[in-house]
Amino acid sequence: MSDPRFPHPARGIALAVCATLCFALLDTASQYVGAVVPVLMAVWLRFLVQTAMTVLLLWPRQRAALFRTRKPGWQLLRGALMVGSGTVAYMSLRYVPVGEFTAILMLVPLVITLLAAPLLHERVPPLTWWLVAGGLIGAMIVIRPKGSDFQGAMLLPLGLVVINAVYQIVTSRMVRTEDPGTMHFYTGLTGLVFGTLLLPWSWVPLGDWKLWVIVSVMGVFGSLGHYFMIQAYHRAPASRLTPYMYAQIGFATLGGWVVFGYAPDAWSIAGIAIIALCGGLGVRVRHG
Image 1 (cartoon, helix red, strand yellow):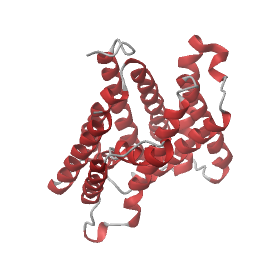
Image 2 (cartoon, helix red, strand yellow):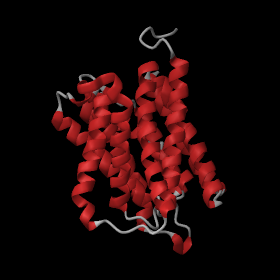
Image 3 (spheres, helix red, strand yellow):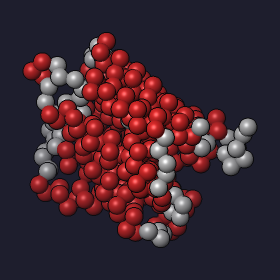
């Protein structure tokens, strides 16, 4: 039975899939420049482009309303979480292939369910605890020690999962009173301010103009991805969209193969499958 609040769910699904493509392209580009461009400099450039694009996309429709917010403190917190997420993601992609990195991030819906218990006072079904455990096992298979190549920094994506889960919970609280476009603007602006303050300690000259283009395109992909997701949530419920988020694993794996010539081995594929299975079941448990 269709939900009258969401008359165009198919459009929402299409927008969500477009968003996952943008996020996969963002992560692939981040891995490409990760060995050359300092973390904070790349984050600053990304949020510079994102803030400019947000204003260009939303100003014609919202005008001065784009800047009005009832919760400036929450806007700052959400922006700070996004800065932390972008920074940790950029660092993680120096050590973990983009396909496997993306698969680990698919644990976020499960972790959100766990955090919803203490933060949103929601009941967590017992099955969810087993699914989280299964998802973590899948993640450890993906980032398992591979001889002397293993480094502690390869565990960074697990920290990123927690940051992104908190970010999503904060977002779910804010959408009750805040305009999504305004939230998107202040998130980018917060990242830009933080990045600008730290820029003197992170700036290095980039001799190759292609790096400037790639880092700028990262901002475009990030901004479009979040914009598409905002529009998707206006057209379809979260429970309907979440299963399609797993398309990002396929896009990211393809990107890793095309750009870096990397294809996951059998163990990594098994770990990715376990994560996808546990995450998909977790969505059904929570919304079923």
